[in-house]
Image 1 (cartoon, rainbow, N blue to C red):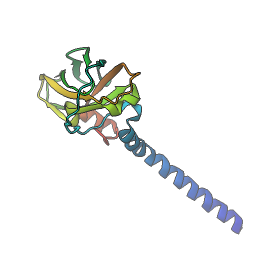
Image 2: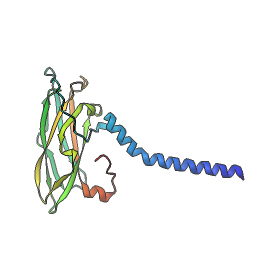
Image 3: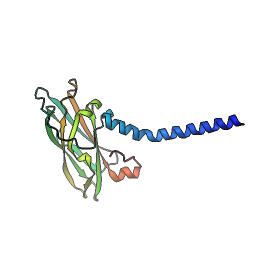
Image 4: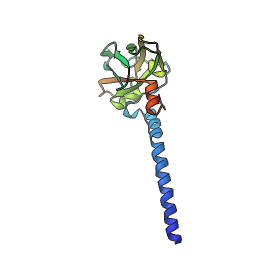
Length: 182
């Protein structure tokens, strides 16, 4: 009887440990992605402005993409589809968003960079993605992004895509979507 009880306790402990590991996996993965840039995640904090000599011998194409999650009441788009940039030089672009509802709402943009290994070289000094965006009913506006591509970007990377998905903050909370990292 003692061996059965010991086995049951071990199985219960294993089950609790597996549940705990599964519960912590998402936040641990998010921290790992934030640190390494894995999966194209960029930092949600402004990069400090550093005097970097631009690499004028090299051009990188930066493409801009915008999407709205399926329940988002937004019109959202980049003002330009792409631009050619010199690594080490600061650039500014804008995205345009409009609240399509007849009531005030709060939105939040989640950025990603492709290819994923380029995320650590894509630094934003100013971005609408750093904070929640409060929109009045039917309000539309430009939202700036100031960025710099680190000159250490691997030479084989010739195109970098900056993509944002815009979410209705209330819709995220109602859906029970984790808010960490937003």
